[in-house]
Image (cartoon, helix red, strand yellow):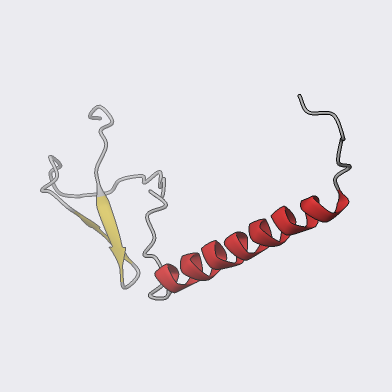
Length: 79
């Protein structure tokens, strides 16, 4: 039995395909422990989504700024 080692692979069409040659001899019966990298492609409209969020944040901040001016108590004393 050989020592365990780590292999980077991609999963395509139901098959794990190593990115580099493996140091194993036939018969290649192995046990896989899979840890997904979590790397996913961004949706094509991600920039538009973030732009819309930024515009909405800006609009809300401007509205809050105006509202504070109407509701904040004004002191006659100057600091």
